[in-house]
Length: 554
Image (cartoon, rainbow, N blue to C red; front, side, top):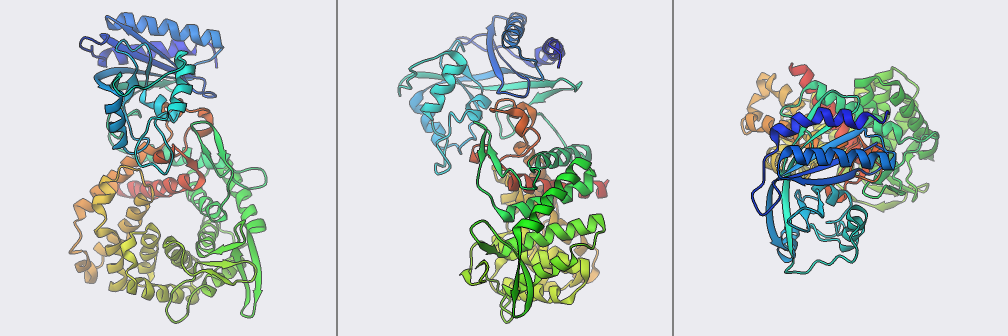
């Protein structure tokens, strides 16, 4: 990176910003601009400038940014410029009340400690430094005074800050623009709504989605160590590694990587998949000899055998076998499937959820609903590969239980996957009706949910395949009579577009402690922007399915 990169970015940005920036009324400065830049390796430096006209403010900001970059020997890889569009003055007491009714990390406005914007913070600065985050147990945003004081000292040199109830504070909104070295584009950034702060994309195209699949899967590839074990995740506000591990999520993340590799054929991704697959089969999966023969189980670090663990092993190994053509894992797949059948009551179809390794003693009859849909889906995918009737029979037994227990009320994406797969081979009305019940009462939630909730896209994409097939079956079309097809597709596209808000675009990542580590990944905003392998996995699987849908529709 050459030192001249910042002048290039500033030159490219100026016309774009000048065209859109508008003056503020008195008593605030006429123009307030924030210049944020980073080399990608460290948290962005942010410079705030004001001026009586745009030209003055831009000149001041441009000069200060270049002086700061030279002083710190920073090369500007990414540059973002935000300008204030509206300001509201309120007391700290009123702000606290506003934060309390705003979901944590969803406060999308900046804060200035004074009318002159001498000491101001962008929304992304507040959230990326956990200044309004009180922990996962608290619903709303909250003033985190320790984190606020910490960053205020770094950013503005402020010491001994207090937040008196009747003290005045300026709460503001912005629009912005972003540019990066290596790209000719200047991206407009959205304002104060739930899309705030990221590039404006009016309509998702296959190229957009393919790029998301590429970046998300490339991120996962970087998290696979030489021995095949993942780095489980990161808390990006302060670049803290999540040291826990979960064998089930190792396997399910591997499944999503194989799905993505089928799209990208990226050799680096394939190498990471092979390392993670080796760790799965050599370390995490254990064989057990029983009176009914040899079985295999995914064993977690606490010695637990989870029904969902065996299921996602099936998914990963079946998908890998399909896309590579290998027959290497057929024997292991059978042993894993036998392990699932061992956990099923042959009379009722009901599954046991958690066993103890190696005794196979029952630890928990039920843990989470997801395990059951995973198990049935895994068996169906294996049936699709081998056509062994044992697996289809086990799934049909399971569905007798699912229907009786009204499992469709959970609106589980795994059940959506499974019923779609089941109806490919057993197109019975009772299964189709279950599949429709699994989503029909959930469409408003899919449209309106403010968290990204990536499994909702997976739910919709699996349902879309089933709906599409139903529309082609003359004798089954009546099953769709209760479905508002227009609303169904509106929900599907709305959720796919909304997931863009959970992607670590560079214009988001630049404000966190180590941008290069997280850029291109996906996060969970209300968990302090947590990036965990299974978080990324669900975004990936949803977008792979959405890409296939878009390409087939075009």
